[in-house]
Image (tube, rainbow, N blue to C red; front, side):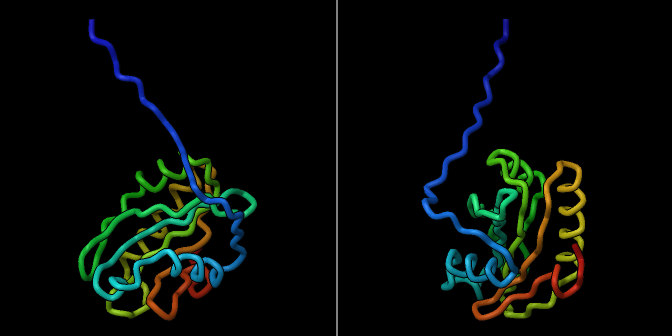
Length: 146
């Protein structure tokens, strides 16, 4: 008789502070402190800020690291992490190593797909930030995208 393996689910954070995000500017300030600035202009990365309903940060998850001009963003991984830690709100963040803050068609496409997927699970994608060392672009504020 074959026995199935048990799946274990856990969530652990060392976050002792109760950080609350109420604007895209605060989200940028938080994420830039948690980004390796030595490679921000070298390699594209994608992260997600996970929050509860009160906008308190549960943690930051490293979604992917890519090459010079792209990074794979798997929506299933983002959603599985969000559900695992009981997040209800998300902010997607990635950098453009070129320093350009203009969203690409791929950026807009992944934002739309993630927003729709979040809606199905009663989660909210609050924003998608494109960042550089000194500035950011909010798809929510600039494009009224979300």
